[in-house]
Length: 560
Image (cartoon, rainbow, N blue to C red; front, side, top):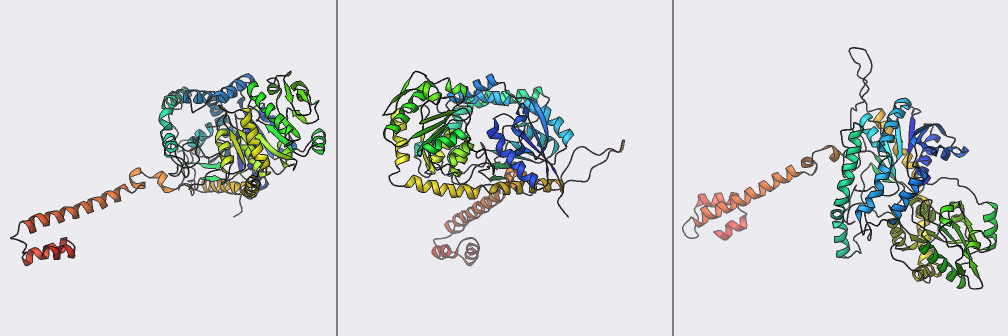
């Protein structure tokens, strides 16, 4: 039987295009296999797929308004300032803003699914309403995460709750205090988690949703992680959870003429980008400018390309002078590209810049997409993470040997200079070697996006051909709207569907424990009543036979 053409719905909500890109790329692979691809996203974000590159999308659905630009800027600034090491209340507060989209996403997705009738949903993990659609309709879903999901599939060699590691990726070289602190961290977060859960439950009840999504140690849906072993700490995974990154497009925007001209004149370029949403504050900007000035004076670099939005450029001090050794230049001239060694741009074709051999270092916020691209193109990194997975990614690039990291709460100009110098001079050659090692791993692993498409098809067809025939009502002859499975998901481990007592073999352990204790008890009884109760150490033939049946032979011989 030939595989049929199925409808697959891609869903992207908050989080920006970097969250949508891997979902869209998986859609591209699936469209090449003949499937019909549709997209659901917030109003205004349809422009993401307006180009010919996304011509494979046959229909675009609107899920409601996107985040207001002013609210979005405030949200990311709030995230940027929070630090879970100091306050989990501050760390969880911005999450209320993102989760506030759940009612709108939920209502729109119900209508979209009713009209589109997709066979599979592939969504960014931010759109939690997709899990409700899965729960209500049974339609299989695949959630795309930038890193291993929070709170799922823990490992004994990785201290703490999965996804919340801060200062150690594993316990291999961590101190006892670091491991203990990681294990106790959830207790510190209780005061923040409880109000958050109350908010979520209240929001769901207001929409008439009176059930809670299942919380398990393993996902009950396909989970695809846009990362790879080498950055992620290896651990055992269930079949429904897979590392399939880096998920990267085969094509990307090229350099424009101005950047081509810049690279023609510069051969040791530092590329700086802190992503779309990070706004470096003036004191941090001054530190980086001073550090780059020192690198110019030491002839370690001869050019800087800085991707900075208009809002970011407004935070620079325009009259501040940057000492470049042979000259001092006001920041205003740098921002307006009046100095031949600096190039500021509100948008940069990042992958094209990273691909150039003249780019010798990438100063980054450690976003998942940026790290994936830098490793794929073989660039050394200096990471300064601010929120979510960024600090953890900066720790990962340091552990992988492809860069160094800064602490957003405590770094100096001297530290920036020292770490850039160590990366660029690379006296023992370890950075160059590890960059090549990780580049080849990333390029081999990037082919797993086709495996991710294989998994999506596996789950989709397993669901399609595991359904009971439609049950028709006796009154009107209409088919039952609830689709019921004849058999469970083929990739789901059986323990998820079993009671804890059975899944962990507690019943067998109880039987074994009872048996051992019974034998010990009988042995003690025999010793007390058949030996101590006898005359001296002589035992009659009847007692001896009973002892032989109960006690080991050496013990009987000793007693006799």
